[in-house]
Image (cartoon, rainbow, N blue to C red; front, side, top):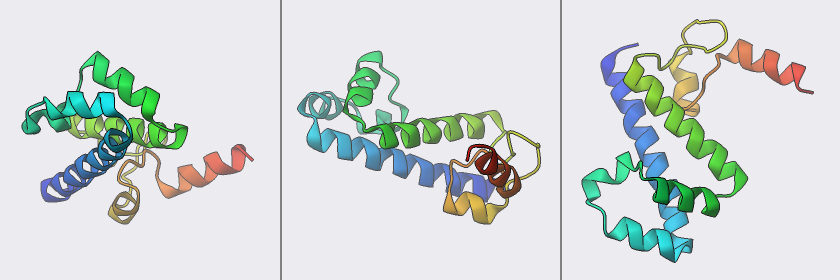
Length: 118
């Protein structure tokens, strides 16, 4: 997978993360106060325990799951493992990553998992 594609996906993931954070901050005054006091450059790298706790409390279970998946995808990018299926080790097609940038499984492994979980 080329660096330009990975950088594009990283930016997309960071944008999705910001959207979730903005949704939360719109409905949570405590988080809004903390975020407003931060340097804008740091907003993509929020790691403070207080902010994490506030965000987790404010997130719906679906948003929390998506937020954690985005965080995990950003870690995989930093480790050079982004776009590789966690189950079979094959490359996840770019089309799948464009549709679901935080995907951890290729289409085949995802289908197998979904069949098992029915």
